[in-house]
Amino acid sequence: MNYCSECGARVELGIPEGEDRPRHVCPACATIHYQNPKLVVGSLPVSGERILLCRRAIEPRRNSWTLPAGWLENGETVATCALRETYEEAWATVTDLQAYTLVNLPHINQLYLILRARLVNQDFRPGPESLEVRLFSLAEIPWDNLAFSAIEQTLRHYCQDYSGAIFPFRILDGKPLR
Amino acid sequence: MNYCSECGARVELGIPEGEDRPRHVCPACATIHYQNPKLVVGSLPVSGERILLCRRAIEPRRNSWTLPAGWLENGETVATCALRETYEEAWATVTDLQAYTLVNLPHINQLYLILRARLVNQDFRPGPESLEVRLFSLAEIPWDNLAFSAIEQTLRHYCQDYSGAIFPFRILDGKPLR
Image 1 (tube, one colour):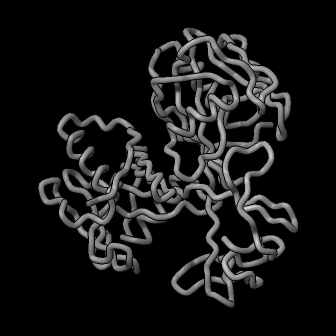
Image 2: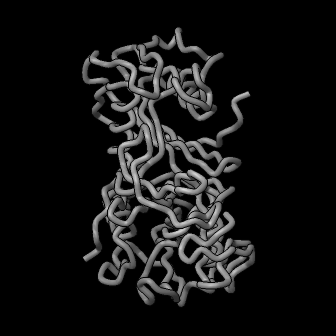
């Protein structure tokens, strides 16, 4: 951040009165420009014993597999966002959304929230950001070619939980994928 | 948003190629300025049969009661944030954090995440943003003077769950307080 988005003046880095950390502050209009983590919301679409994954058509991690997920937009609830991203990336319709994992990624100022969901039918196909969309049995999950660590951690927990058929909500600390 | 934070040019509202909604776009350097919801994280500190609330020293809702909570900062995990806010607002130390409610507030582009937590000791006192900090039995909760709807909804669920001693994680749709 170089310029104030409100008045266009050059911003400075300083600790505002009553705060404990540096912020971008505008010396002209006194606006404090807070910067906060962003939330990625997605679904883990389940169809019987299989789950749906998308092969990415875009960078980062083009060609690797992921769950349908994307930035939470202003005006959305997390469920709205999960439904929208699942539809946009896989033209898939899901229902029965249940919060499953919240993954902290403080090193990149992100959080992932993944909701388990039931795939309503088999009418899915790649959206513009996907090269391929398909169902995988748990034994088929492409562990060596998953896009993001938060996806890998979520899927590892899903495989562990699957045998007991109990899927508790978890907060996880994310890590670089490899 | 009026000016590009990267180059200082006046931004324009337009739908970027491949997107489906208006964004603030810089005509000079082509930066797209995404705006996304922010996450408020807090704790519900429990001490036996009582819970800790803070009376706000600052606007909005000065003088009303709330759980210790605040914006998730860059570089933080949700647990780190909940611990920090609980300490800053109530000088209180909590442990055993468990995700309890995630409240959607799409009308104000916010989300609240509240974690249940156990108060470690009775050494608490008002921080700079609080006028008063005290423990309330569930029968004493000041329902007519709570600061925010997300706090009220969380406390109502807590009272309902308390009798059964089971506190499932919930995603709630927030609403204006009154």
